[in-house]
Length: 69
Image (cartoon, helix red, strand yellow):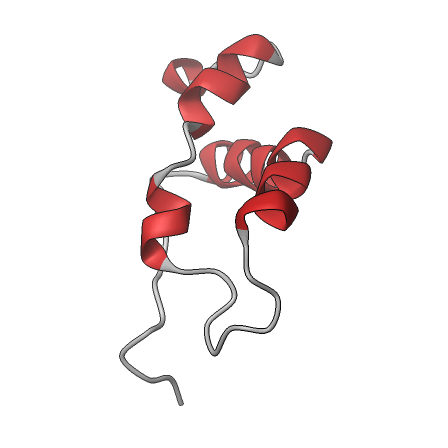
């Protein structure tokens, strides 16, 4: 069961999902989220916060080509 605050990422293939997973769990993204999130808030990670992430740029910088998957 989920409520109206849940978001889902859909992928066309496993490689794309794994690339995004690695990007979201990277030290850069984790550090950014920790610095921008309000840990005592009702919703620590918000849609607006997630929308600030440029995952495709991080993937390019890390050599993870999203277009190739």
